[in-house]
Image (cartoon, rainbow over the protein chains, first blue to last red):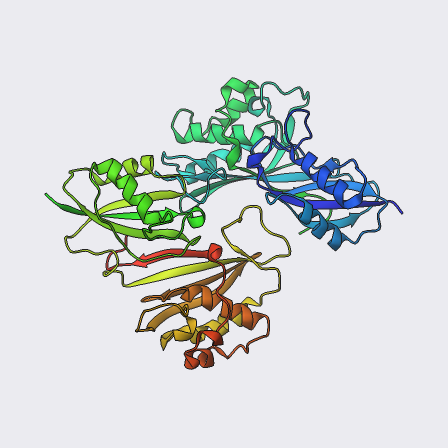
Length: 250
Length: 250
């Protein structure tokens, strides 16, 4: 009987050219498909919850696929982790209803961006956080980022090269907090445009540097112009943290 | 004028054969001395707060040295971080009184041992935590480890090859706690014998596995026999977390 299986995956994206299967570079989904082929004996198509850029990490990345194999979920998980490289791990495997689609059924996503804010780099965070040595006033940025919350046209915070037409997205939660030298930007929404979270971070850092007013975000959004926002922050600080479905998989 | 400078250091110990200068392998103190020589122009002796084993990490490791150079502490820090490899960082540099000795003046140390307790390895903790897949009851171990607190002869929890005579040490605090899949063992004391924290962890895991009774630690200590305790847990989970002096350097 053909079953629909969901894999919940964590990965350190440093070594990969993003999540998508590509012709000339190694994407995470290709590595997953290769491992899956070793486990199942046949190459199956997989559906991923989203795309992540080169160097971006994930604490929860979801893929689903159909199989005729009558393998137990727990065995599937161990078999996948046997064949996968150390920087990609299956944390869970679940059987899901026919028709479940990891991308279409995702109701929203939460991203976390990690900034190591000190005057020296951390030996424990190489490729895992943005190193930023100038002072960050997290309360100021936490207030400023509330202007991202709501339904807006995010053209100004989308990579200029994107060919997606509808750039309206709804952000339901946004915060900036600090734990010691680590500043965390957390954002939850129904969907995200290309580079959107990284441009949000670049824009907040511009506010932090006094180059943009703390209340400037509504104007940045209104301009619908990529040039109005800050730079695209480096990929290494970004983590896909959670994918929301109708079920809570954790 | 000859000054006494203290460097506070963080390192990922994965690539090094412990902290000490050695003849046939690269120790962290040698790398520090090499960088110091590049900054000062002369090779100075350094005094380290303690020894750590191969693969052990430090969030606070202290060394002091004397110099005639009139370099500002903040410049010293940046210059050192320029010359050091990425996995060793100077987080602070302070001028300390003549006579200050990083080892002799250390009043105590705190170690943290990280255990990733799940049925899959974390891609973010390679070489940074012990991967342990069997269930750990952290409340049970937290109660059990209270028997380490106090002044005891720790012969049973010291590497059999150690040539130190006085094996009496005072443990002032000890705990086991959990944050999600991460179990943390934290221990503070006036001093630690060779492999002592790692053998404490091995002993607690033996209790967790039911191979040793939860109240067995006093008997293990009383036997003064290395064979009475558990295995030496792997180095990768261990972090020198804090060194106590009469000043609070953080």
